[in-house]
Image (cartoon, rainbow, N blue to C red; front, side):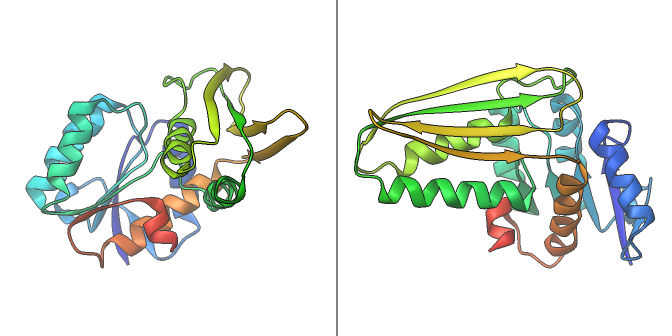
Length: 216
């Protein structure tokens, strides 16, 4: 059984992970970091900064799903990954991974000049804006557009109701629009992805891993 320490238990994602752990015999939720085999962090950037220091001190693998991290924290993550395995991902959904793969295929095959518009919609309590996933998609598109066929990449953010997460990516040229969309109807998909990462990371060497590294 894997002893899992959850940083951010009171948040929406924390509550979802706890509910899944209750149904999963592979994990036991522990409140003692000293006996933890792995840590999952879905908290606030200030708390993430602290848990990085604690997992590094105790040599415990770390899965980070917290978004809105500043450059200082990202630098701390990179330094920590030299000594412990760290998985950092703004989104741990297989569906979003597939969305990115579809976008990559389009960008590689596209020969026309297009504009790209990324729209993300989340619940009103989500603090970071734009979402980490939208930022990841923007960086992905700019990185793989080797032919410079994409003139504009813009992100728009909407906060309303209790929406778990909608990401829509639209490529527009003079004649047609190409739309790629992912709609998370439940937080379970993110929590399941996080638990899969936690199960795999305990067998990995110190390094900074993406969700794509784990899926592939």
